[in-house]
Length: 139
Image 1: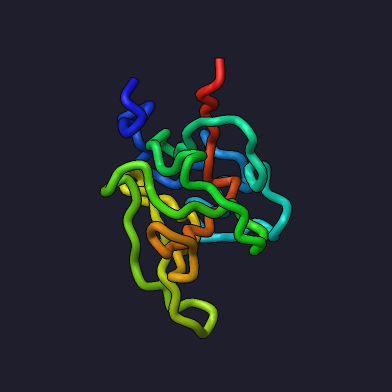
Image 2: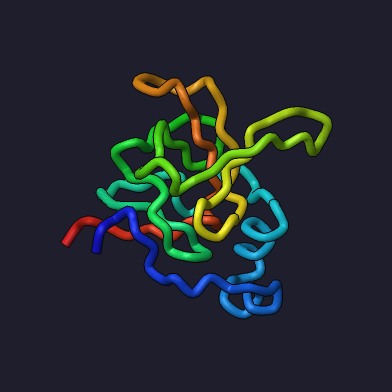
């Protein structure tokens, strides 16, 4: 399968359907724009090569080649797998202006992106582990 494709084109249409397929934590983050506590996420330190997919719909979002340790407490990436697989929008919640990162396929909240990352992009995609599934490239 091409890593830029989704695993399923059957994106739930209602909150009830989302609640049936997601865990409570996944639902809170992806559908209610929540955040997991820092330094608690499953994918903070990944040693295998592979692709991180949206936990809601399976869209390929990030890969381990772009992952780095930002020290901020959430999985961080310098770039996306393919343009269009993620979208961004201005987030003014919590009395500040940030750039929210959303899955381009299902609209699920992933985290935020900041302009304080390393080269080559200067970006730090700060993403909740619970919004991701990891597909190892290791055999």
